[in-house]
Image (cartoon, rainbow over all chains, first blue to last red; front, top):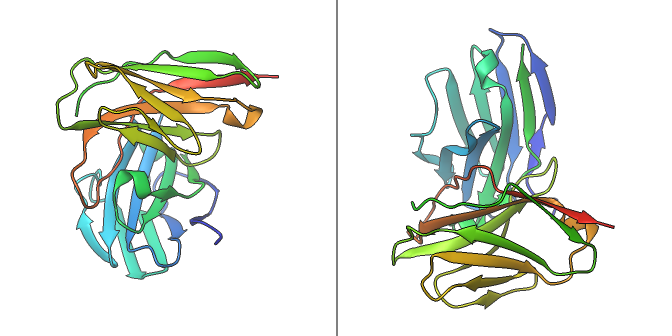
Length: 114
Length: 112
């Protein structure tokens, strides 16, 4: 298995632009998580899905952020409009059972908003 | 979730055992100790977890003190590939899906 795949690996954009991050989970995993990591705040859970349905989005910072999972093999995290404070590494993780010890992380997308 | 304290950095010689400490003096009876690591430019990786008994798996051993106020992660024969930031967190095993949250961790550097 190729593991969790994220694209792009790096993204540089200007403030106000729309950013779309993509994730392909491990085949057969029912849970998908989006995280954000910064030096200041560490790793934070943004949202997670179970069987393509959003279960907990309480970590999504504001309305500028949205996430979708149209099918079991694809998810997107969109920021519109982007701001410099959104600069971070965004990780996607997938899991069979959902528990923290069973989550497999992708390599992350490093986002820089100028 | 209880707070943890870890040294910001540690060095260890390749081939030796790396012992990473973690203090969690306010841990509750239903909270487990989890360890993860993050190699540079990669996502976090689960290592091991335990409640009160010592645990061992193919990656590491976890030693939890009798009063559960501290623990030590042991990498028995450290290699250069073990250079990473190691995170200790304590949290209840809630069942079902649950997100991770961790802060600074210990930057372990394995020296050749």
